[in-house]
Structure formats: C-alpha cells, structure tokens
Image (cartoon, rainbow over all chains, first blue to last red):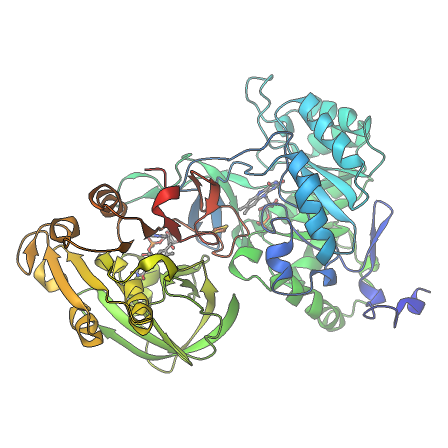
Length: 315
Length: 242
Ligand SMILES: Cc1cc2nc3c(=O)[nH]c(=O)nc-3n(C[C@H](O)[C@H](O)[C@H](O)COP(=O)(O)OP(=O)(O)OC[C@H]3O[C@@H](n4cnc5c(N)ncnc54)[C@H](O)[C@@H]3O)c2cc1C
Ligand SMILES: Cc1cc2nc3c(=O)[nH]c(=O)nc-3n(C[C@H](O)[C@H](O)[C@H](O)COP(=O)(O)O)c2cc1C
Ligand code: FES
C-alpha cells in the first residue's frame, strides 16, 4: 500500500513498519533516553534517519548538572550509571537542541521528560507539547517525588497516575509512561497508568544496583548506587514486558538489555510494539544502525513476514 | 571518531606492569596529541580508554599499565590479534599557545600522551623540556624515547632511587613559556599550584561511552560543564576548578 514511498526516499522495508500510538515508525528500533544525547553525536557517525525514532536525554524544567563523578561502573554484561539527569533544561532544549536536531533528523522525536513534582512534569510537557518535532512524550516516573518523601513516582500506582493525569491535561501528543522495574508489582503500576489515560507504557528503566571497589573498599559510584542496565537485565525486562502485555491494552515500548536484532524480535514476541536500545549504544555506537540493517534477514531466518504479526506472539 | 579493527603488531613490557602496544590499521581519525582511543575487550562490557602515545600514517602506539581486569587481559594478547577500537576521541593538546620553551610534565602512565605532543612541538620548531615522574627506579619508562627526540629530560622518583628525588614539581626548570601535563590528580593539583605560566591538563574519568553520548564523565569548569571525553580530556589552566 505504501510502496509508493519507495523512490521518494530510501526505500523503507514495509515489513518492519509499526505504528506507535498512531504515529508510524519505519522500524521499531529506538535508541533509549540517556544513551543517545540529543542525537547529533550519533548523526556524525551515521544517518540517524534510518532509525524508527529516538528518545532524547531526560529533560527537566530547570537545567541540571547531575551527580558527582564517578558516575559509571562496569558490571558483568552491563553497567551502572548515576548521571543524575544532567540536561540543559527544557527551555534550552527547545531553543538550542531541537533546532540543531532538525538539521540531521527528519522524523518525530520522542521527548523524554523527568520531574520531581507533578507540577514540574506538567510544566515541562506543556512546553514540549508546542514543538512540532516532538512526536511522543515519554514520561520517566522513576524520579524521586520531592513532595512524597523522596519515593519515586513510579513505585506508587497513585502517584504515577497523578503524573499521567497532569501531563495528559496539557498535551495532545501521545504520552508514554516509562516505568521503573524497582517495584514489587509492575502490573499494578501499569494498570493505574492506563486507567489514568496513558497512551502507552515504556519499560524498563534501570535496576537499582551498586559496585564496591576492592582497592578502596568504597562504592565505585560517588552516589553509591545507580541504575544497572545492559544485556544482563534482558531477561528481567522481557519478563516485565510479558506481564504488562497481559494486563493492559495500550502499546508497550520494551527495553532493557537489547543489543541485537534477535533481542528486538524477542521483546516484540513478549508484547512490545517498539523496542528501545540503551547501554549498547555506548559500547557499540553503530548498534542501532546495524540492528535496523539486520532485522529483515533475522526476520527471514525465523519466518516472520511482518513484525506486526509477532507483537505479543508468545502469549 | 572512527571505529576501526586494528591489528596488534607489538605488545611488550617496558617495566613489570607497563606495556607498549602498537596497533596498525586505519588510524586516520587521530588528529592531535592527547587524544585517546577506546578499546573493546572480549568479555568486558565497557571499553577501556587509553591515550595515544604515538601515531603515524597507519599505526598508533599506546602505553598502558596493568591495573585491573581489562588491562591485565591486554597484557596477554599477541601480535596478529585484532582489537575493535574507537579512535580519535577527545580534543587533545593545543600546541598554538606553547611559546618557544614549553614544559612537559608527566607522571606514571600520564607520560605516554606527552610523547606525540613533544614530537609535534619539535616539528613546529619549539624546544620542549620534559620532566617525568615515577615512584621508583624500576618503574621508569620512556626516558630514552624523549631523549632520542632531542628533548632535555629530567626524571624524578619519589624514593630518590633514580634521578631527582621527589615529585615533578620538585624539578621544574627556571624558564618555560607554557606547560602541558598529564598524570594522577594529586600531581595535577600540585602542578597547578607550582607553575607560574598558563598550561593544559589532561584528565581521567570513568567513562560510559568515550564519545559524548552518556554524560558519564562530566565535570564542572569555570566556563560551564565539560565532558572529559569530548570537550576534554585536555582542559586549560584558566578553566579548571581545583
Ligand atoms: C582519557 C583517558 C586516557 C587514559 N590513558 C591511559 C594511558 O595512556 N595508559 C594507561 O595505562 N591508562 C590510561 N588511562 C586509564 C585507563 O583507562 C584505566 O587504567 C583502565 O580503564 C583500567 O581498566 P581495567 O579493566 O584494567 O581496570 P578495572 O579497575 O578492572 O576497570 C573497571 C572499570 O573502571 C574503569 N577505570 C578503572 N580505572 C580507571 C581510570 N584510571 N580512568 C578511567 N577509567 C578507569 C575501567 O575503564 C572499567 O570500566 C586513561 C584513562 C582515561 C580516561
Ligand atoms: C547512561 C544512561 C543514562 C540514562 N538516562 C536516562 C534518562 O535520562 N531518562 C530515562 O528515562 N532513562 C534513562 N536511562 C535508562 C535507559 O533509557 C533504559 O531505560 C535502560 O538503560 C534499560 O535499557 P538498556 O539495558 O538497553 O540500557 C539511562 C540509561 C543509561 C545507561
Ligand atoms: S563517557 Fe559518555 S559522555 Fe563522556
């Protein structure tokens, strides 16, 4: 049906096209927030228009420097980060980053938003709502709620739902709620977000972890603990996507440890409509381009005609 | 930045735990002394950042100290094996402000990046003098290499077993127009206080990516935050917050 598009731009693989909350993605491959900056470090390396989209660095109302260093620790098949949401603030993102991005990326981008109060989430989203380049708002509720004793919004169904309602009230763009895996019942949180009006669920954010340096006998990370991600967390992430898929009707963006085209397919079989890739971009800067290129061949290998046929296929 | 598959052509010990590795292949992304490469190692998730010590048309030389899993693994690699390396990372040293008599101050595995810098300064007709600091005599390396370039070299050892006893800051020459330094942070701080000209410092930080994507290596400077891997690793004296 859309084959007419071939020739107009690089012929897109119709078999990999998916729709996320009403916006078409040429493929489900999305670099995850915090591992792709605002796009242009990677645009220097390859044409990032080959991606479905990407989720930009977690943006807050005010600029943030983030945590002291060291912010990074290595783990078996993964890493811990405690960057602390370093970003220039939403006004600078709109004034500086988005115009720069426009030069190298011609698709709707996913705007990842963080906040420390319900009002802050709403204020930041209201500003991004006015930006035509922004396709989706991906609202990260893993941050501590300063009015809620520092507990993360994402660990309490009520607090998460409050964020959803506040954000939905200020935007017409699709709202994806990005959940933390550091909870006892991810399904309850996902359901609460769906009921509050979320258009989709992104999961998982990083798992709380730490490392201790044997030489200094102190935590490696200045902040002591940080977010663990990378291939090691894939089974945990996959399980959570699988559980949430059974409980909600809205689409899921699956992530956590994805590093190759096979992982993308596995995530989709668990229930993901699209898939984000995080830590793998840091160690292999071309990984998302390579996944996009390899996806058709891997689909062939597993006799998959169209990716839409396999979403939730394992259930 | 470029991702290259480089072939090991040499991997020899210079001291008990410091090795020189020569890697050949496409190194065209290396444009300045003080830049670094980021090396992927089998079985380890994060790459290992190591400074460029020397670079010619088709090879880079690095000098590394075995301090942990990754660098110990590197000591066991043999010529003919290949490594996936991101090359041309970081800003590197700027030779423009050096004046006629720049001073190069290196400590331990902070010495290697000064080698390519010395070559470049000499090629520009400047007369660098070099002070290399080590803990003890049998940890000294690269002295002869700098001498072979034609630099005036002073070595210091903390225990006095070789050269001048003390730290690099105990062997500063009278006259220099500018300085360049790389070494452990206590040494950088001492250099900051002991020098009376402007200069450039190379910093280390734990890195997630090495090319500016993760904000893992940010530091505060007088002119705002900088990523050690992208706007660094070399910072100017005037912008450092010590
Ligand atoms: C820009 C830059 C240039 C460098 N140049 C050199 C050089 O020329 N020669 C040399 O011997 N060393 C150099 N280093 C230090 C070198 O990166 C570390 O010694 C090395 O990463 C240790 O790895 P490991 O697996 O042996 O140690 P482990 O302790 O097992 O490493 C665990 C993790 O910590 C990181 N890490 C440990 N120590 C350091 C450190 N000092 N700096 C940054 N990350 C660290 C590792 O990369 C790894 O991710 C440089 C570091 C930076 C940032
Ligand atoms: C260095 C780093 C920074 C991150 N920053 C953010 C962020 O700003 N906002 C966010 O929602 N998630 C952030 N994340 C989480 C990732 O987007 C992703 O959810 C998580 O890392 C799991 O995917 P992975 O295993 O592929 O890394 C960050 C992850 C890393 C590694
Ligand atoms: S190490 Fe990732 S930004 Fe510097």
